[in-house]
Amino acid sequence: MKLKITGHTKVVGIYGDPVGHSVSPAMHNAAFEALGLGLVYVPFRVVAEPAGVLETAVAAIKALSMLGMNITIPHKERVIRCLDEVDEHAREVGAVNTVLNRNGVLVGCNTDGSGYMLSLREETGLTPKGKRVLVIGAGGAARAVLYSILASGSAEVFVANRTTDKAETLASEFGSRFKKAAIKAIELDREIINEHSANIDLLVNTTSLGMTGKGELDISLENLPERAVVSDIVYCPLETGLLKKARVRGLKTHNGLSMLVRQGAITFELWTGRKAPIEVMKKAALEALGGTFL
Ligand code: NAP
Image 1 (cartoon, rainbow, N blue to C red):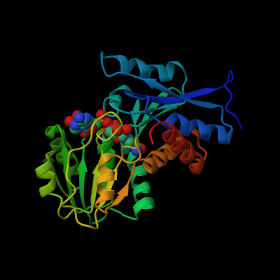
Image 2: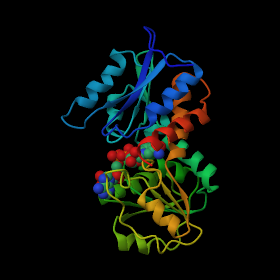
Image 3: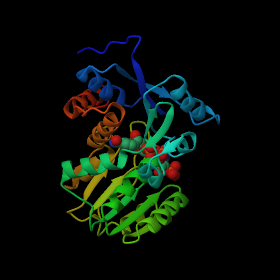
Image 4: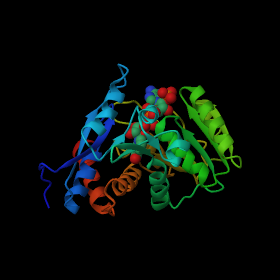
């Protein structure tokens, strides 16, 4: 069935900057078409400066009776204070990637962590329970990924970030929430990462480095054990410089596409109350990436 805009069409979309790289419009619009829903997904570039732009954009969700909104870089944490309610999981994570407009009440949720865990298990067979994990990044996506890794019972976690203060805040905040795991912030420095790599089961990049046009993460994977999985939540390109390095070293890799599809499917179900057509979404996302970035 073809997507038709009528007087009844409802809008959902994504707020972020940049948003031009996002394949979420292709993925969700394909799903709306497949199920014949009167919905359309639109990307909106919402800049971080000047102050007040995000607040105005969030108010527009209500004013224009949109069904909801995805939130991406750099707004996942800041958007919380613009919403009427935030569900328990997103509040604990400290970041929102999905907004639901429930009859004029804007509710924040977070589907990134669940999407990440589902995709990691499906693609690599790894579950972080009892494992040692190195998380690079301390932004909105890092919060969700780290929270889910800790909730699944990982034994020891290192968090490295360019702005070390943010890694320390995250380690101390989540350390008091998950008392059984040892969580430590470390510097995002080649030598220090190398020193902490020897016993790592999962290394995951949650920064935007590796994304087309953003530069690469400058770390060595030489010290990782052979069993280690290297995961990158960046999906554009599908194989980042980090994943290429891991593949060349013979390590198992996990790219950001299946997380994108899984988190998108959970969001789709929250917005529509319908079961997400996963295969349709994955095909559309792959086609969108293939056309532009492969
Ligand atoms: P964010 O909240 O803005 O956080 C960005 C992170 O990247 C921070 O840790 C930041 O470090 C780091 N960073 C940015 N530029 C850097 C640089 N030049 N050198 C070192 N570190 C740098 O963004 P986000 O929402 O967490 O998203 C991060 C990435 O994850 C994006 O590429 C996004 O597309 C991707 N993502 C993918 C999925 C998926 O489904 N596959 C889901 C969510 C996000 P500082 O704290 O020092 O600034």
